Image 1 (spheres, rainbow, N blue to C red):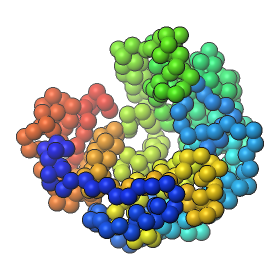
Image 2 (cartoon, helix red, strand yellow):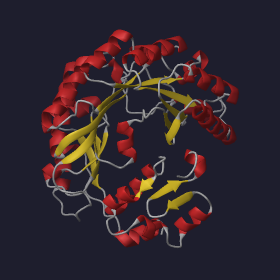
Image 3 (cartoon, rainbow, N blue to C red):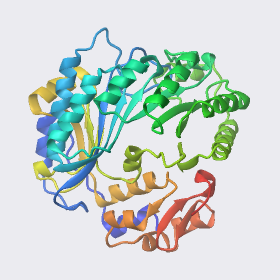
Amino acid sequence: MAVRGLRAGLGAARPRGMGPGCAAGLRSASEPSDPGPEPAGPATAALYVHWPYCRKHCSYCSFNKYVVPAVDEAAVRACLVREAQTLLRLGHVRSVTSVFFGGGTPSLAAPRTIAAVLEAAAEVAYLPAGAEVTLEANPGSADPARLSGFRAAGVNRLSLGVQSLDDAELRLLGREHTAAEARAAAEAARQLFPGRTSLDLIFGLPGQSHEAWARGLEAALGLCDDHLALYQLTLERGTALEAQVRRGALPEPPEELLADMYLSARTALAAAGFHQYEVSNFARKGARSTHNLSYWRAEQYVGVGPGAHGRFVPWGEGGRQREARVQTPHPDAWMREVRSCGHGTRRRAALSPLDQLQEVLALGLRTDEGVTQQRWGLFSPRLSLEAAFGAPGEARELQERGWLRLNGRSALHARPAMLGGFR
């Protein structure tokens, strides 16, 4: 049974209201709807906090970020604090499982801003002392003194945006740091966050050879801690790099070369003791990202800050279904809405049971654990994995072709080439 069968078994998806600003969002929450699978009562959720500012525009980046002459950090901090508390209360969140500061460039924020958000979350929900708190950092704003300040503020894991250890490639990507600065930042991070430092690398740059990628990965393996994230470059429309490729100024990497880069990297990382636990993420010694796993397991998360996304049930507004929420993207407009309403939710839509199962599949199949029956059952108590994917149809055909495997009644996994073999 594929998506068509799921739709028949669960009922067609029915969207709920969406609209700009807090007033429209509050109206949509009061509309009647079918109850979703979420249990009532105390909830847990991860917390994502978006810092939207950067010092420059990278040539490949299409994230929600802004380069401005000056930032009124006290105002931004006050709004992050208020929105975090508002949304955690709205979701009746009693325990925060992890926190992730992303951007933008959150390492440009003052450590006191990071501390203020963590303290605000802990005032309205339980934040365990050992909960994972990750900060994304760029090497250009990751000197030892600054990183020490973040550690004192409560950060215990660092995700360092190295992207490349080649100066020419860094210039092509529009990065502000050099390879030497990236190495120095990685060394400092390993000293301050031992066993909890991740490096991000990008492959598939226009004109990049397989040999150049292999050299860069080897250099990163000599520098890294116990977590690496490898991302194939996506040429996003509206970015400077995509425009250069589109008009022929730079070559578009061949698909076969990209596949070879990815597969050879998986082999090299396995030889270095890394386990691939998600399409782009590799860890050794158990250093997986707790926060990112919450996304891939389709758990609740609250998104705070300009343009942040969230998935949670707004119990505090009488909601009974999980909602997909997006905060107002522009920082100035977002701050006005937070001051006026307590939060800057710009768009929201209730997720039907079918919507949620589609997310469970799309996210879970990215991981080595796949979609377990236990996880599936939280969202589909009446239709089991075996009933959905064991019957004749498109899903059975995908299994026969080797793209999927239903492991008895326990889990559904993606093809072996994706994550190093079926379990």
